[in-house]
Length: 500
Ligand code: AHR
Image (cartoon, rainbow, N blue to C red; front, side):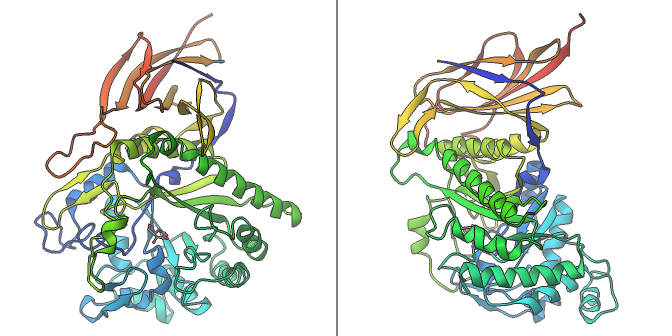
């Protein structure tokens, strides 16, 4: 089958904000305890941080990490997670029915962020708490000194303010499962007042209001409208969350999952712009897709985990090659909406629905989904071009006509490089790509073809075979551009100027 990619460097969707390649660390299962932090592990540093995990995170190059939840944050008291470790209380985390020892709190997270070279994106509890606790938290973290809370931070060993810029005003407040779940009116009012207080403290903070937990929520998209009508003057971003599943083991449908994400993003953009028009405003609300991933493999196993323990084995999805293809498609969707989606967080980072797995006391390794994320983060930071594909499609009962190719094209003017990310969704036919790039007198030379392919869609990486699914890297050349059946691909092109 043939796929022609039509584009021009003059037709640009937008410039990618590097925070599109963010991730998420929740106090959940073994993400923190046994993941980021394992005091007695032979590879842990003086702070108990696993250096093997930090290396894999650094390689992924995640510019922003959301913390400490997730559902967890909605019943969390930030004061429990600061100060001397031996004085921190053991608490019940109602969200995940776990014990929370509070040994990895704000300072520990900030130290970890510095070591892996990322920025924090802090979530505030608006489930069980309100304006007072939110403003206290921000003062503790960001005020230089001379007030009770800023001096408290200093006494806890952090002389300089953390200067945390991004703050999520709650988490999934539309969800009935959330501790402190609210109606759109209740949440909109609270978020607006919390946002107002935080902007009085510092107008340069970037605030994210909760959008819908997914596009199937009965309250979607009225939730977005109501929340924005209340919070318009104070928030900068609206959040979106979406997880993808393949319970029916139907590859053709699963591989088209990102079409649902496209529709979700586009609807939310329309609601934001509707409220903008209604308010006669000049302001644009941007989107923070701060939770996304494949999540379903661990659902049954999770029901068997005992309650009220530390570091439960929760949400430990083992990802297949097929999941990696879906993650590649989702990354293309984020790239193609980079004009409005400025922040996105792969949920999550370690052990919990994560690209990185660890064994307690043992090794760490990367899952199949690590690779499309790694390459998108490395080569996706440029200008996304508005491409059109000429490619056959298949009929699908959920998504209608699904093109066999899913692609995104990123232009790097300074390097004179074009990077084409393509997933061939066909389960049985390879695809030959043709580029029809309208541009200045120039020629394209394929300098590298990186692909992810396995005969078995269900292939996984594990502790003993960590490289079952790994990138195949080939030098470019003048031959045809072939994307194997059911494969993820990155074709890198150098733009060579031609003298006239
Ligand atoms: O990422 C796992 C959970 O998914 C988060 O805690 C919650 O926000 C979402 O429902």
